[in-house]
Image (cartoon, rainbow, N blue to C red; front, side, top):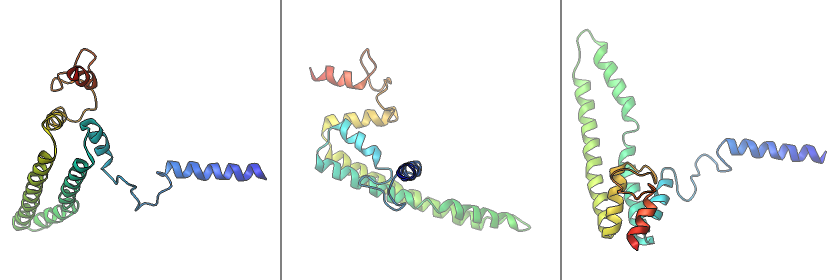
Length: 165
């Protein structure tokens, strides 16, 4: 009987692990969805708590601006089908969709400029250089790329250690 209870508990635990852990679907933990990558960035840039707060707020603002695009694909499909439904091509639904998308892209551009300005202001010159190299290389982990100017081992950590000597 005791073995049956342990087996059941293990089965429930396995189910929970395969379904994403013990959290309910709305719970995203301390870091939230998408913010996990910021932890590695903070470690790599060696940021202070104040800098982390500015970067996190900027990231959230950009994510909020980008989230407005979520429902746009459904609206575009509806506008496209409305344009194709008639005897002649109706350009008005597509023009309205394009204007709507242009407004969303413009809002995202403005938010990107504001957020990048805040991050630039918060970081020191070394951190800005490191972030620029990360962006240029496409955030490819610690692999060596020409943008990193890595040492013989091909690891950015070796280069940073050698530069600190």
